[in-house]
Image (cartoon, rainbow, N blue to C red):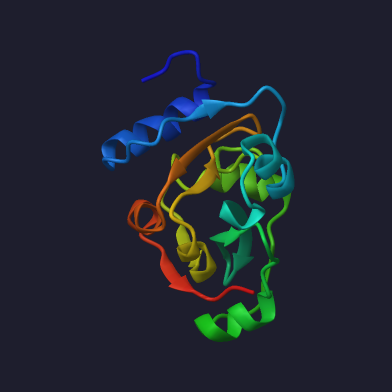
Length: 158
């Protein structure tokens, strides 16, 4: 494990290692707190960025791993999942649920497992990139690895 990584990213790296995912977390020189910034920093399509968005639904956090190419349609997703309304979590709720700041939320390394939805659009890419626990850290993985890592349900989110 790379001890030069921030503490939050070391937790993510440990989760990746435990799951057998080989993608190493890299530290970017500038914060990449949006999909567009991350894609530009990595010189890849914005759709290959797996945004980790935390929502609140039925009194619990819901992690949605969505392609950076589009937004989550919360009404359609709530209907598809048979849930009440889905709304964006507050920054405090995000931090409490994930232990990570908005703009750096990873799909793993949280204090407790989160119910996770994985955007089917991410399957279009051979390699996708996700935040590594801070706005300055990212790591690569495959769609199948993301689904396995999160235990997520694959569905359309846009």
